[in-house]
Length: 431
Image 1 (cartoon, rainbow, N blue to C red):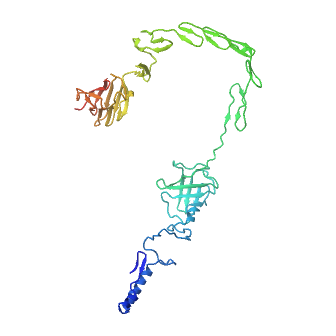
Image 2 (cartoon, rainbow, N blue to C red):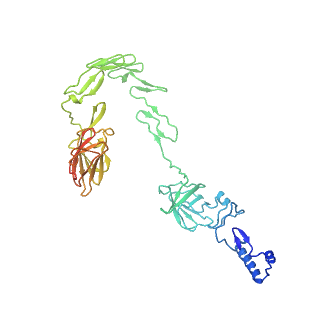
């Protein structure tokens, strides 16, 4: 029988044989001895002369008295892990050329290998690490940058991880950089003294000049500096009231004038209605621009990128000024129509979809044209109305809710809004 489920069973029971009047034959002895032989051969020897032929379940027990690993295929003892025997080493190389000799030794670099070493030399620039004389590998930062000087210092501990994709060691531990000395200075400008480098404390002092005397605790102003509209008295400059201004003891007051009423605490503007030549409307002190009252809006200084803002029901609306024609938006792709697309030529160079938004979400103006241009020999543009939005075209003459049309390759079409959620499309539309 031998071993079964961890229990050794004898091949024969001599007592049972005696009770059953079975003769003690040599063949029976051989059967029993062969069973013993098989059982003994299935056991591990304490001198290590044989090896397991399958995994050894420990049944919740541990191996005790385990020594430190000497080869890569030895398992680690708790001491190996706690004392970092397997991944901490002291550098034996030179500055910028670091070397360590792990034991058990490493035969080849592998992705994710992590090593920690204590440097015996500071680096002066780009550096390498050679492990077990396999070959020197560059040490870099995470962004694939070579080390700068003093990122490794004497006695510092550094962790590196091997990156097989970049054939490099990545320094994953914090590093040290001693910044180069930079001479920083404070400059004394005109009328000041005391500038210099910040190697020492600096005090800036005011230089006395024309009409100014620099004292220990203050600056005195002489009467000679009082100019037009000012007087001087005991080192104090006073402002003289002028046209529209009244100089009081502690403040300046505005004098009432044409269209201006000076009150105790404020200045009020006289009401004035806008006209066809003057768009400024003043009502109860509020100034507004009444564009509707004007017959024309013009200005030689307006550029194509300028924007005029007008009020529409309390909401500011921007009107872009165009020097000549519509502005062109190149390289357009799949998108939802937006305010920035108004008064423009949208050029599409690849198959795309343009969605017409619901008015409650994107309130676009009525009657403003958008030219759609497909600049490709085979690619097309699909114009799709959102749910509850109607699209009117030759394919949908009565208007189609959430309908779609295709602008042909190399074709153009004009798109404009006719009502809150109604859009019209006309041009090179595929049937």
